[in-house]
Length: 319
Length: 140
Image (cartoon, rainbow over all chains, first blue to last red; front, side, top):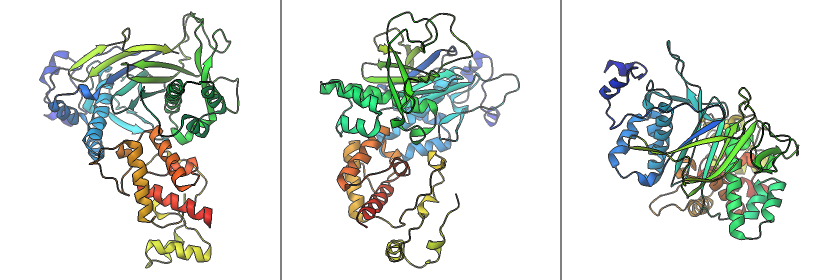
């Protein structure tokens, strides 16, 4: 068991994965790193977890501090959600280390604004990939987005989510004037409801990508909207005439914050999902579509992974 | 941020709730001691203007009213008990829940909560304390 005293590093040879002291039914299949314009999304549906022994396995992956946090959640449902969220983050990140790091070995820290990030150890013969991640959850889904070295924010919301307060009251209070005006143009209450939720997820994703917290990037200070295509601000050639999602400061309208790119789509037919990622300026696109690329997997860690990118589980994508 | 807790320390034997009476008499407000015990390194530690809070615990009825609003907003199961000690994060409130709760509280108590104050609330008790401060400020 002496290897446990080191940093829980797995031996390099894949056949020795089977001899790890802590047993899991299947090792995690390694995944290829995201490319510069890609966000990888791994999501888990808590209701799909029927095997209670899995919960014990997931608990094994957590740090003592994380375990305590999970157990402090109020009630079993919230505890299970919190546990799955940590297990999803750890197993997802581990997939990108080519078998070198176990889910259990990851350490996390918070940036000065409280955004969680990986705290990487230094290794002599290997440089870990500079992964960045963000998670979001509802009671019925937990999603983890991963990029290679680019800030990312993700937010999911149940499509059916209803607000206790009136949509326009909420919008007047928290959204920018341009966004409020947009919502007012929608006469149908259901349409207004769903557009509110979608806009909320976009704004959340942006704030989480920036990593300065809700109060560091007040919702009222920025507008997210659709910009018509063939505008000068979007670099690279657009293949379609589809409008793109842009963000601008309320105080500086017309100056789009090009650093950030978005994707908004429906996941698993149940959730609106927004992703915000910093544009990779080190690797500009060679004349091809410069918009954010997505790869999406549905997972139940150690049990099943399914790539759902080109399926019905990911639809109505707007970028 | 240096804490200005001298006012509180000079009256060591008085129970917390009577500070309100003392402060009322002298027109003073002291920095909340409770803000010092927060060791959570979150966005709350960003530089913000010094905020003075009346250092007293809210009435039980206020706490109960907050519990009711929170329970309704989060649609919690019947067996989930909420008390003043309950933290919003452990009740599973996301950011949309939080803003809805703040708006619900504003409506119920006829007050207006600033964003910075809202960010400093981590428990039901914090919310109740803030509400009473704002209600007192309105009528005072």
